[in-house]
Amino acid sequence: MKRVVITGMALTSPLGSNLNDCFANLLKYKNCINYWEELDKYAKLNTRLAAKVQGFKMPENFNRKITRTMGPVSIYAVSTAIKALEDSGLLNDEIIENGSTGISYGSSAGSLDALMDFYSMKVMHEVKAINSGSYIKMMPQTTAVNLSLYFKTTGRLYTSSTACTSGSLGIGLAYEAIKNGLQTIMIAGGGEELDPTQIGIFDTLYATSLKNNTPELTPSPFDKNRDGLVIGEGAGTVILEEYEHAKKRSAKIYAEIIGFGTNTDGTHITNPNHKTMGKAMELALKDANISAEEIGYINAHGTATQTGDIAETIATYEIFKRNIPISSTKSYTGHTLGACGAIEAILSIEMCKRKWFAPTINLINIDENCAKLDYIKGEGREIKTNTIMSNNFAFGGINTSLIFKI
Image (cartoon, rainbow, N blue to C red; front, top):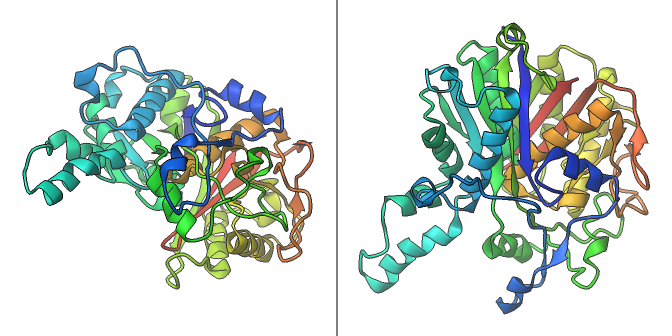
C-alpha cells in the first residue's frame, strides 16, 4: 500500500479565503453569522441567518467562456483548486494531464439557479432556456466535472455528492485511490454555494437557529440552549500525493492521511445512529493501525442540532472511552454542507501544525445529554499532538472519519 500525503491546501469560507485570514479570525472568537435580508421575502421561512464567504476574488482569467458551465459552487471549487495546486508546486505540471492525476470532489447539489431553465420548460412548455451549460451547472457532479475540464485531467473522477459528507468523502476516496496505486495525484474536496432553498429544507425540519436578532450567539454546538444550525457556503481543496513522489520532488508536506473510515446507518434518512457513527471512527482507527489513545484532538461535525450533537458525542465516547479534546469549527463558519468536511480538514491540519486548537464558541453550558468529553470552550487550547481526527455525518446516514498525522 502507498502512503498518502497532502502537499497543497486552499479554501474559501465565511472565515476567509486564505489560511492566514482564517486562523486570525479563529483567534478572535467571533462567528461569521449574519442576518441575510434576502430571506425576508420568503413567507413561512423562520430563520434569517446565513454565513457567506469572505474575501473571495474571482481569478482574473475566468472569462465567460471558462465560466459558461460553472455556477458559484464550481467557481469556488476551481478557484481553490488553482490555489491548492499552486501551493503544492504542481500547477501546470505535465502530471496533471497525463492520466496520473484524478478528481474526487462533491457538493450537496449543483447550482440551483440553473434549475430555473428546466422549470421554464415544464411551465411554459417551450424548450427555450435549456442548454448544455444549464445541465452542467445544475448536476450534483458539477464541481468534479468542471475541475476536470479546467485542468484537463484524464485520470479517475469520483463525485462525492453525499450532502454533509461530500467534502470528507471526496478526500477519503482520493486517499484510497492513491493508497491502492490507482493514481499518483488527486485533487479532492467539496464545495457549496449559499441558496435560500437549502436553508428552507432545514427550516422545515425545525433544524435552523432562530436567533435572528442575535446572530453572534449562534450556532452553539453541544450547548443545552442550542437551537439549531446556520447554513454557510464555501469550498475546500486539498492536493493528495503519493508519498515517494512528493519526497522525490522535495514537496512541502502538510500532513499524512493515515486513516479513513466510512459507512452508512441503514436506519433512517435524517435521524443519526450513534452505533454506526462510532463504527466509522473505529474503521478509521483500524485503517490507520493505531489505538484511540493516539488521537489528541477531534474536530466534531457539531452542527448544533438537538439529536445530532447527542448522537455524535455518545458515539465518540463509546469509541474513545475518555475525555478526549473536541470542538466544532462550525460554531464559527456555520454549516457549509458539502464543503464542511474539506474546510474542517484544512482547519484541523492548520491548528495541529500550530499546536493550538480553537474552542467551540457560544458553548456556555454543556448539554447533560451529551457524553462526557473534553469540550474545548471559552478560549483556544495548546495541545501537543501530531495525530488528529475529523468527523462528518450526513443525511441519508452517511458517516465519515479522517485521521491526519502532522
